[in-house]
Amino acid sequence: GAVVSQHPSRVICKSGTSVKIECRSLDFQATTMFWYRQFPKQSLMLMATSNEGSKATYEQGVEKDKFLINHASLTLSTLTVTSAHPEDSSFYICSASVRRSGAGTEAFFGQGTRLTVV
Amino acid sequence: KNQVEQSPQSLIILEGKNCTLQCNYTVSPFSNLRWYKQDTGRGPVSLTIMTFSENTKSNGRYTATLDADTKQSSLHITASQLSDSASYICVVPGAGFNKFYFGSGTKLNVKP
Image (cartoon, rainbow over all chains, first blue to last red):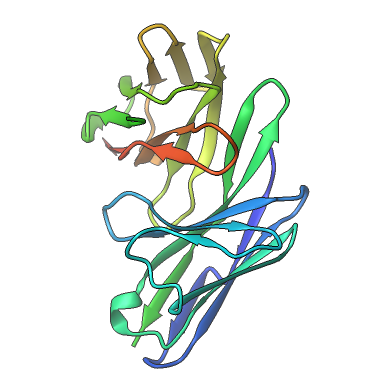
């Protein structure tokens, strides 16, 4: 299957600083990538859909200026948490969609990034 | 309304026992359904994908079924192991390329 690499896996930052998370599709081109947030013992919550070369589409309630998404190439999307605060501490996961002939669309996930803001 | 519902929400079984997880969906049009395993603190990992024409598919101790008529899928785990403890998520893509519908997951706890 397709491989999606997410980096870093863990990051601790000070309140007020910004953190960038990278999501790469290693062996395929990802026209569309997704960013999710997951709180402990809860389901994945879609934050935004990122399309290469265009602005990301954010879900209701997600601050565009706080969670900056850049999808500059077909293999890389980045999520930058700006001016991070302790309440931004969470598990962030990216995924990329692949269209399979005869099988529809599939999602492949990165390993996730544990963000802790102190 | 496009939805994916999973049951049970959580499940505790003894090591070596079998279990079955359920996924009902109302997503239309339907192209495929995928089961993922998510270990705590990790991203979801694909277990199996079921397309419209497939009824049963096995991946080791995991066997998935799909009934496209009733829009139901199940994931059967045979001879459970402690390492099977995880959340199992059912995902169905929506029309087009930009939408996936997630079940809320089943939290499986395998005890020795």
